[in-house]
Amino acid sequence: MNIYETEKLIAEYLLFHFAKPEEILPWEFGPREALDYPVRVAEHFSGQEVDRGLDIGCAVGRSTYEMARKCQEVIGIDYSHAFVEAAEKMKEGPQQMPCLEEGHRQTDLTVSLPAETPAERCQFEQGDAMDLRDGLGTFDRILAANLICRLTHPEKFLARLPSLVHSGGEVVLATPCTWLAEFTPPENWPQGSTLAWLKETLSADFDLEHEANEPFLIRETARKFQWTVALVTKWRRK
Image (cartoon, rainbow, N blue to C red; front, side, top):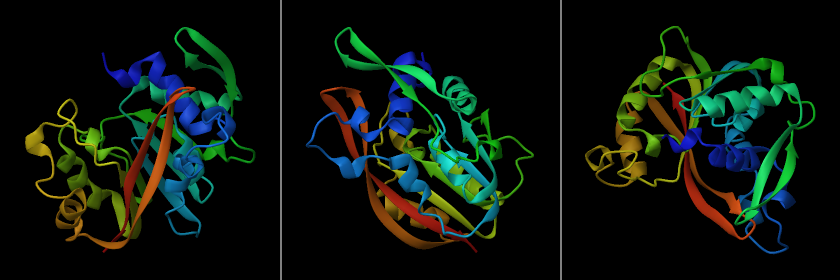
């Protein structure tokens, strides 16, 4: 079974995307700079208003909703049917979800969209980043956060990017570079660094405008967390 269809992962990602800082990290100490990652990656786009945005690998949707603050329309696409359903359901209002404390102990939390989120600008659909449907059109902004190192053939996704972005449009890619054989066959991993591979693959159609490192924190239990650092690159369509 796809782990991204399980109730455990849905709960973890709703917490990751929408919970309050103290609900994710219930300790006075800890890496608080790693909170709000889905918001921070969307902030790498420039500040002006644009027409269309695309969030590929949107998970449960927080970055899609954040992009809508500066995009008149945003499409969020994820391979997980469960994630897409959870993202869409956030439009209905506060949602209850289980939060695992330890063992069999869990508490019920309520998560909701931040105030003044323009949710009506967002739509979500299930799709394969390596085989995106025809008819998507072109976009002013594309975000792919924590996606490419989870694809069987990431080069198929990267090859499609130029046809999806307007001239002058922006692409933000964020990846923790955790290449794993269970997701991507080793022969499809970058031969050198992920950054060098991205530059080689994208430079014919895009200019690299900046690169950054963004930490993120995923809570598994009250005492166990995943702390990771993503490589973030921003590209401008030639």
